[in-house]
Length: 321
Ligand SMILES: [Zn+2]
Image (tube, rainbow, N blue to C red; front, side, top):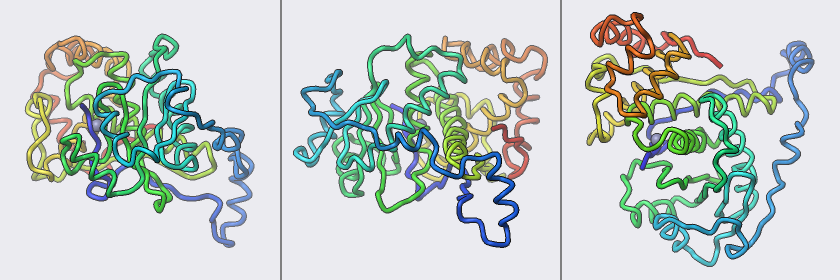
């Protein structure tokens, strides 16, 4: 089970600037930008509402996990159901579920392509449970015995998220969970915790920004620096088998893991892919590092020295799109 932090505790994701709300003084800039960016609704946006509601009995895939059944046992008469090419949705309002379906399919396709995986090889659909009310989510956390800081979950191939109708920018939780889904489907369950969470953070922030850029917003992915005094050496970070007990350290674990993925991807994207595959097959960190990066890092200590300054500096990261 891989989870996502509750957003109000650790705001994450990317910065969004609505291009449609530029001030009059920036009119010329807006005109210039409008020549290259879609300021009117795109074809994808026009299809955002196209999600046909159906009944639970008529879904093409009705295999519910125990956690899925626990979700549907909360206000059981009010859940609605629908599906798209790769996902089945359980939700309360279609105006909340429709954008989720557009985002989920986008993230799934983009992340699988980045990891060089062919999604047509996986025929079964993934169930996404979309909560809205804080009280319902809290009840679900209780019934599922989840940590109170959990903001979203990927468990046994199903996703559970909360979308607050009052919040305009929904954040990167969905992209984070879809990244876990892609990783588990195509690399199996043996991917180490730091890599699973670090890659999910890294992919989600970039996908969230890309999704909104395609809809006319100025958006760039963000990455959190690790507070200097809380930096954990790479050897310890990558050896973790479970989340830290202390909630502040949980936040550092996510940030530092994301920074390590970002650092290694920027150093050599192909090498990072080779390392990812080796780790998924059970290689030790140093073995996988040598396999992916050859002599680029002499040893774990050399990597740690170089990575530490990258991890703790706010602007140290070259952020690829
Ligand atoms: Zn996660």
